[in-house]
Amino acid sequence: MQYILLVRLSPEGLDATLANPRAPLEAEQNVSIPGVSALGIYAVLGPYDFTAIIDAPDNDAAARWSIAFGAKIRGEVTTMPAVPISHLQGRSDGDDVEQTSEPLPGQATS
Image (cartoon, rainbow, N blue to C red; front, side, top):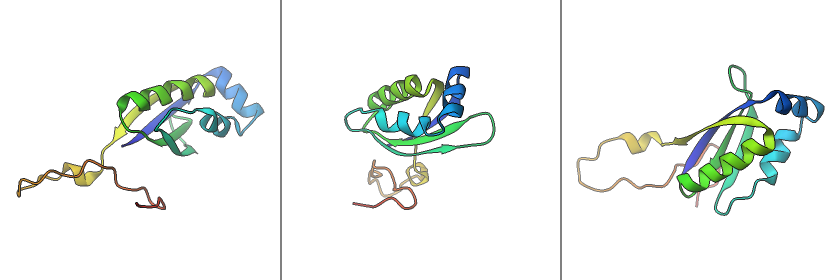
């Protein structure tokens, strides 16, 4: 399952990022939670400084990654599960909708 993380840097995190613009990437690369992979981190405009996308097996693993990332980046992180639009469609034939995430653009499919 994929998760979107919205990040607001603390004043200390902002100072660290200004001193070392690679700090968010280094924080992302230094967080290691079994089963969780970071798919990307992006600087954004608006009320947040960065957004990250991760793939995690469940909410518990996503929460552990989010907490570790927030501590390393020195910021406040809001983590939200990303539900593919196809999962919101009703099925009339009684079949279960597959529970895996759809790949992001450019992401390899298995």
